Image 1 (spheres, one colour):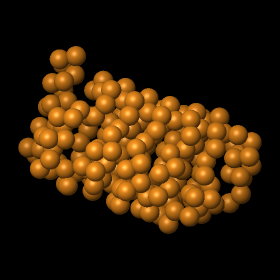
Image 2 (cartoon, helix red, strand yellow):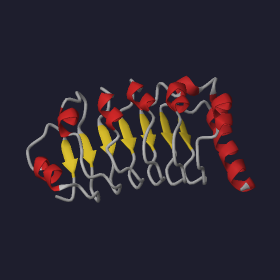
Image 3 (tube, rainbow, N blue to C red):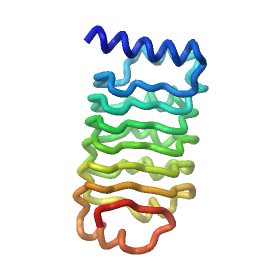
Length: 172
């Protein structure tokens, strides 16, 4: 456990000291985004464009995460145990890519459809049965949605067969 904490601290300090625009806390055994990180990154939060929290054990992200990293362009949460996102995700004005593959979502995170800048949504290997195709079709920037390896219901699978203005990767 001490080694994991030291690893997180090293990565955060490198981001701050080197003025990086990305923060990689993947594979750090995190169960949540550490509160102390908000304080440490306060001075550089506006500069951070990419955050990778892949392959942890995170069950949730707080609204504070999204209100702190307002300039985020890419968020990688692949390989966690997330079941939902806070409503604050819908207020991300610059987010272009979100990776939620290999998590525990049973419903499509509806707030994602409110992000006008979002181009890529990866939800591969979750437990989602339906996707809001009408809302997705109304998203101005959306180019790509991955819903492979989800137990999509037959209505959703039928709807996926119609042409869409964005690419859909599915098992259909």
